[in-house]
Each structure stands twice: as structure tokens, then as C-alpha cells.
Image 1 (cartoon, helix red, strand yellow):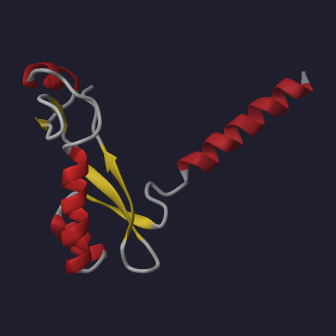
Image 2 (spheres, one colour):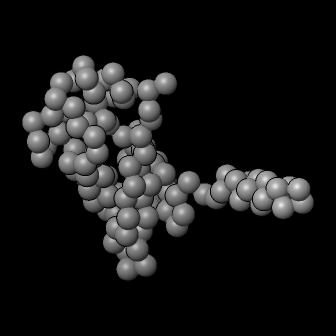
Length: 113
């Protein structure tokens, strides 16, 4: 019985730790160019937002019709790599590298309830 209680306590501690972690470690979650410029500089944001837009049009789920995509996601856009539609991200986690370039972009999606 003490092992079960210890396991539950450890699991609760892990979940609590996970909740307090930042959404975008080392960067910023931005939805617009203005939010990006508030966190970074304009030159970096121009490149980062363009790359995030291109990435959103070439990755993720794809659906043959717009209505099929909208059944699963609140907003969709045409894909560039295939003749299909994909979800439109609501924001992007943008991380700047120490040299000033783009280290990582992680798209953030809002799932239809």
C-alpha cells in the first residue's frame, strides 16, 4: 500500500512540474507580426513569420476538401505541397538561436471542441 501512495504522489508531482513549464522554452509564442516584434526585432520576425507560414502550408494533417478539414479544425488553408487543405495554426513558438537566426519554429494549433 505505501508503494501505491508513493507512486500516486510521484505522478502528481510530475504532472505539477509539467504544468508549470513554459509553453515555449527559450522563445516566445506569437500569433501576429506585432507580437513577434514585441518579443524580437523586425528583421528576425519578417524571416520567422514567413518561415512559419511556409511551414504551416507544407506540414500537418491534410484533407481532400475544405469541409472535411473544417470538420476537425476551426480554420483551414490550402496546402502547397499537395492538392489538399490543412489546419491553420493559431500561433507559433519561435526560438532564436544564439547566432541570431531561427533555431526552431513549432506551430500551435487549436483543435475543434
